[in-house]
Image (cartoon, rainbow, N blue to C red; front, side):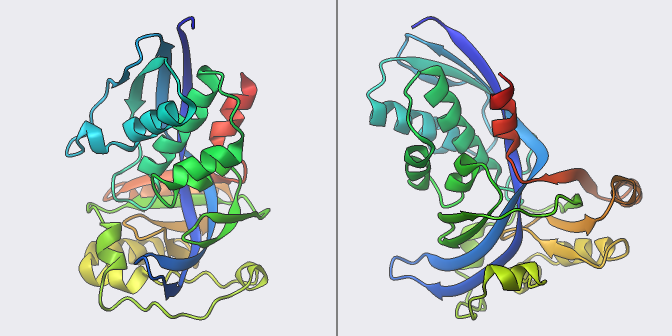
Length: 283
């Protein structure tokens, strides 16, 4: 195999709602959520070679290589497909850890999609989604690549066409542990399920919000600041990031300019098609 390189984005996602409707015997939770992508991304560069080795050239502080989802995804795909080739991988990390934007899961999904392409494996998207589910519940949505209504642990996906508003995302100075929130004794786990119609009519609850704010008061502070600029302010995933919804770029950038004096702030449009596939389709 001739050496070949590919550079692709690993986009963030927002949870536009997050409901917990039960707890499963395996300890996971039954969820209902809606995913939409945004234009804030990590970037990964892949170079395939004949070495047989997976080498991540960019380390993350506090994340051993053996636990890094990029390395795990590459090795999982290599083993599954019986690939003799290897790859060098360079990560440009822009998404915050523990922010609820799905950065690690997105990195893993981009790795599966990119190496499937570079290694000329020809695996279909649903095979890659099933492989991704072995790595984490959020990996399949990033492989799926379309805005979606999700149930189960987040792996049962149905495409939904959503408005693509502008978002202002505030990144509080804390790292929220998903495991901590989902194991919290004060987390309500038996909420009533809703339908897609209910969501589209305005049911946007995040059932993790109270547990997150009790443990990380700065998240609640960030939400109060955002509420000065929008009536629609939400927590994504289990946090820490919170976001507001805006009807125009000008409105969003005005809020961003004001908030950025005291907070780390991102401004971005929503995307129903993942920037990963937009970039891949352009090649």
